[in-house]
Length: 266
Image (cartoon, rainbow, N blue to C red):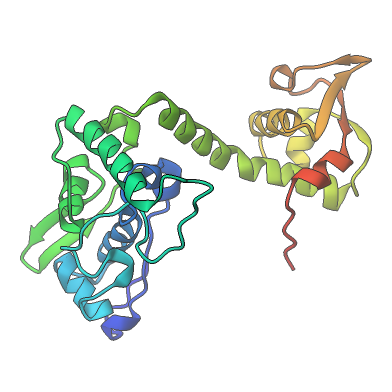
């Protein structure tokens, strides 16, 4: 987060908490959860004291469309002006909103929390849940957020499907960068070989990771269908490879290029 207190308010840098996407709250809360977290993250910067209303006034002259206007705006799960996707939700906006509110309300009620109806209500829940801390000091109100946000499943009774989805998303965000390093080595350094004789230790040295991270990346790579691991003529379990033991990594580049989006960086 950047201190910029000498610059006029509308040019203050906005700051988003890095753990927001990993934690999975965006899949649980009404859609204003994201801009509210962005607003609180900005309030947590050094050099700011005051209420969230003060910050909203400073940056947006008191009205921010993304949050629905101001902190007293009604919470919604969809963007009112977005084109509705009837393939994804054929029941329509009103029925979809009602269904999501029913699930959300039941979840909070079961956990003993009030069901918020406005952005301001949601900000108070953030305080209750420990997503944010508000402290009154001689200089005014100061805001802060923990380095790691509490997870939704630690506070709310998630249904099985949502819990699995959040776990998958967190795992993908954990493993994605590891797999990307392995891909960069295979594509840029080795020129897409059909197969290589290697070991976890060798791949770790080549990609700047430790052997355990390479094992995770390799297991995900194999699970995606882009490669297989063999020892001799037998298939090997990537998750059980020993760091020093050699194996053959056999690539399926046709599958790789058909199923992965590659981004080139200059």
